[in-house]
Amino acid sequence: MKNYEYRQSDLSRAVLAGLFAGIIGTFANLVFTAIYRSIAKFYSFNAMDVGTIIFGSTLLLIACGVTFYFFAHYLNKKNGLNMYRMLVFIMTAAIITTVLYVRFSGQAVPAEFKAMLIGTQVIIGGLAFFLIPYLFRHDSIIS
Figure 1 (tube, rainbow, N blue to C red):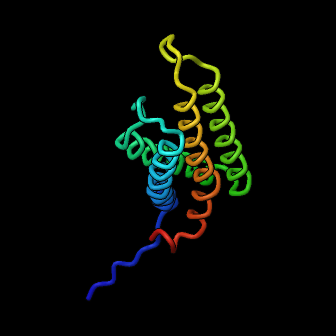
Figure 2: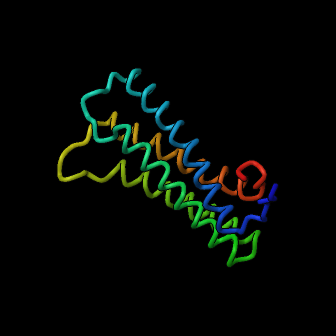
């Protein structure tokens, strides 16, 4: 029997960390939106459906994993981690601020939709902030 064990490269570990975080984020966002919609009785505005949540969460967190790779690989490990986390925090805060204060297409967006969108972005930002660096350092979980 052949032995196919090999050491993961930094890029493959970062992509796998992003993918794994994306799967967890997708599940968490689906559960959050289902619970939020049932509590708030918010069913009329379907801009955020299941397909959007699945692809959006997964692709955003894979992109965060690749971004983490560039920070961790090309900068000092400690400085790269801190700069990555600062970037994730700033981007999450910018998205939340944009959702709160910007009107989309000149029309009013329901407050329930804004709250739901902010909740999903906080989940994605939290996973990008904490889980991707953790999984990158502990690659036995993802490989």
